[in-house]
Length: 328
Image (cartoon, rainbow, N blue to C red; front, side, top):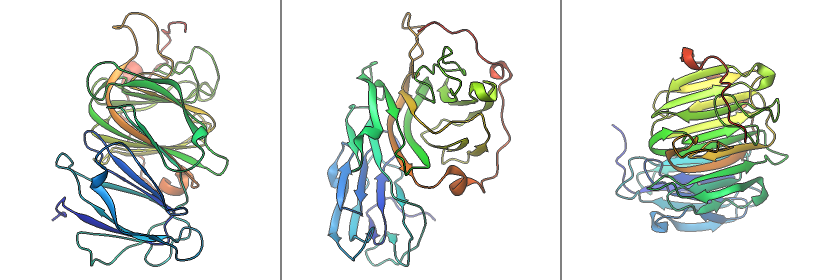
C-alpha cells in the first residue's frame, strides 16, 4: 500500500540540492541549494513546505543539514523530490511519513533550476547564473489557465553535461511545448534552413510526442508516442535523450542526429518560432502549466543508458520530413 499523501518529513544531509514539486495540475516548487542554504519558491502557497530544523553547517561543500516538512495542498495527488548529489555518503537524505523514519541514498551532481508557472508567468530561480535561461519572447496570454505562451533560450553552463525539462500539464492540446536546437524551430523537423543542428521535440494533438533528427541526421522522425499525460521529464545531453511520463513510458536514445547540447530553445504553449498568420493557422497550443529546467553534471547516458529502449511507435504520415513551412 502506498503512503497517504499527508505530511511528509524530509531530512537533508550531504546533499547538493533538492527541488520539491507538486506536479499534477497547477504546480508549486520549493528548491533548496545546500551549498549555500538559499531557497527558491515557485509562486504558490509557501506554507506547503517549511523548515522544522533550519540548515546548519556540517563542514565542507554540500554538507548543510536540515529538516523540511511537506504538507501537500488539497488539490495535489503526488509529490516529487528531485535531488542532486556530490559523493553521497551515509544519510544524505531521508523521506518519511514520520519524523522518526530512517533513510536511503542516491547519486549525481550540483544543479541550477529555473521554474516557470504558466498560470501566472511568475518565475523562480535556484541560485546560480540566471543568464543560463532567459526569455526571448516573454509570456503572453492565450486565454484560460495554463495557456500563457513564451519562448526560453537555454545555454548550459560549462560544467553541465545534461539539461532536464520537468513539465506539468492540464489537458495538453496541440503545441503545448517545443524544444529545439535552432532559434527558428517550428515543428515537424523544420527551422526554415537556419542551421543543420535543428533537432526538436514537440507535443501535438491531445497526447502525442514527436522527436525529430536534425538535418545532420536526415531530418526524419525518431519516434512518436501517445505519452503526453499529466507530467513529463525530458533530459538531453550531446546526442542523447531520455523521456519519461511517470506512467510507464520510458524512452532512451543515443545517435548523431540528436541535440548538439549547445544553445537550445523552448516554446511554451507554442513552437519556438511561431508561424505567422491567422490564429487558426498559428502553431500554438495550451495545457502546459509549468516547467522546471535544471542542469546536471552527468550525461543522459550516465543516468539512463541502462534504460530498455521502447519499441518506436511511428505515425506513418509523420515519418517523412514535413516541408510545408511558412517563411518567418
